[in-house]
Length: 265
Length: 349
Image 1 (cartoon, each protein chain N blue to C red):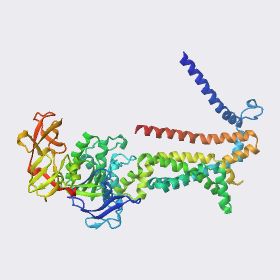
Image 2: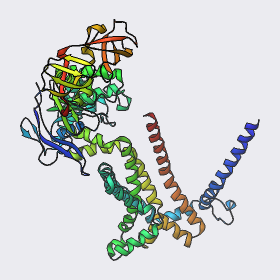
Image 3: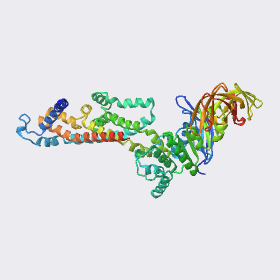
Image 4: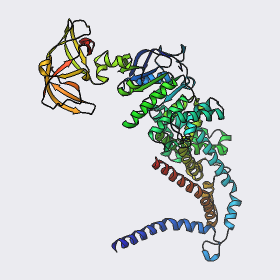
């Protein structure tokens, strides 16, 4: 009897906390499909605001995906070999480099953006193109790729695997592709999802680095909140939400699968 | 006979932090021979193996030759070695067959030939039926066999094994040791084997290289090393030995407890005598030059090991036949075969 009471209280508390967090999100999304937010649901439901978002901000959505994909490519091409080199080389220098790569996590995005502006602001074409934002995103997301790949390397004794492949006649590039990369796959995928999600949602840095012609989705969102009807901004949020949720779910599923495999060993 | 002859000329190894892992080593491995590096951990045996493999570079001046050709600067992937690692280093992203076939795939061997060779090796190492298993579905013994099959699949010039049985439990280790011996004899390939287990070294090696503190303590056939250890360290490391201090002159060894006639010649003076427990016989006290009291008896089936005190200044280990009834406290005589005593000048040990 007492156990059931306790359970009921705990359930109630959990539901309350969940409601506290979920209700604002639901309200916000609901606002995006309401005809008039101030008159509430009674005014009817509509997709006109969502349509308006796609009319007003289509470039920001496309650009956000472009930048996220490009950031992913760069972090893969640079981050995975870097993680491998740092792991195999080891020693104090490798530790120091790892710390430096991780530093952008601790520094406010604004400061990184400022540094980029001070250094490269003078290169007009670069400054005005989306590549400038990409540079910022790569700086910001690189530690997530390097770290998650290094974590896998630490777990599988990649150095001996590499030596094993070498003893069988594989050249450094061949064994990197045949043995190192496939065995680092859990870390690479986890890192990739992280890079894409972070890049899609990045605001701080991007807000400093963008020009009116290189807005990304989160910057556009801020813009719409500042200058549009609340319904449009809310619809924009809804669009963003629909895009980001599948990525988050994929990330979680993958983390679970990785954990399952680890347990089986 | 398969494989190459391996020569090491003045191969030393100093790590960047100044640690000397290996003093300059000169060594010849004959074609088709199985040579075992034996020693306690940190003696440099694995470093030496890795120098032969090409995973480590010897210090300047050291040279590694395969059939007379200098391969010192050749990276491991072009030395055509086969290597079995202590942790096996099997690729978790490939199944058993793909692991075994990897070296052939790299060398561009066509699919049909590869498949035939894999089947041959699977049969040879007794892992039929496991071809499509993932590596994490294999037991320790099975992994060991896959690692061996993978290493010999490419018909290497020299087979290098780094403590391949150490990760297994004792019973399995003994069984696989026998299998490994049969396999190595059959392949007849030049093999260098690293272990810290002296029984493994004796059972597998045509010759054994006993190492200590980065230097070679003795090289020889297992018999030579056992019966004629070159130093106190070798005698103590290989099997059990009684090491007694005494003085030698004119065929007689003076120990603290009595005199022993000894066959082997040695310069007169202070010596250590090395006597294996199994070469000491148990007799009645009045029939022996040395007698003492039994401190402890441990019966291990095939024989019983006694610890005898009072005969010399320290306890003597004796392996007695299992049929004699002996108990702690008994007074016994020790008969030592004059031919079974090995003398070394005391300053050399």
